[in-house]
Image 1 (cartoon, chains in turn cyan, green):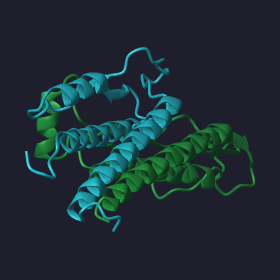
Image 2 (cartoon, helix red, strand yellow):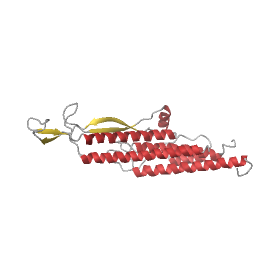
Image 3 (cartoon, rainbow over the protein chains, first blue to last red):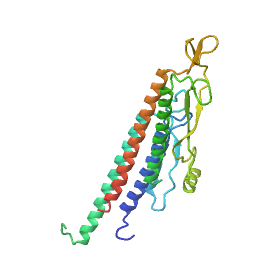
Image 4 (cartoon, rainbow over the protein chains, first blue to last red):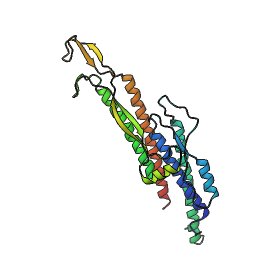
Length: 119
Length: 147
């Protein structure tokens, strides 16, 4: 473990990867909002998060699963605009939080480098 | 998936919805066209959307690793098909395109149907545009890390 590469930073960077992947899946759902027969997908976010928090080694690639319990329209598409909008906002905020935490960590390190002075 | 890939997916959605709006506009504009290069009255056009398969090797790999459905990359206009509904016949004997009985074949276009489709396209476009906005903000935040 180097100075920069702290466990917190490792986990945060994996969390950033996971949120970026999830935003891709959501963007795909939104792009296919009018494609007949398309079924909404999502990351298995909970299991992804568990693997991020537990393992120190490389995490498994995110698992994409079909979302269950959505109402299908007559054309076979079950993308729900509200759900996707909400999920997008959620991912965005998660990403933002993660970036903020990373910045704080970097700031802490640079403070240590500067012998605890505020500069 | 990187964040620029997210923007690419949303861009494909924007493109598909815009094409849809263009086709609707074409239908509305030609609602009274009795002549076309192919002959006969204008026939209503419709877009067929199809979800796209993984584009790159990396996405293919990611898709193979995650079941079911795997990773896809956006949407595409598969084709623009012609609606073969029978034309509306109107009695206008003085019209140059009238047949021997005095009937003119007009395109079978329902303004309500077209307007609903246009609204759907506009909303879909909006939704994709906000997804682009979200991806853009996330990229900007990552850049902030450098400051």
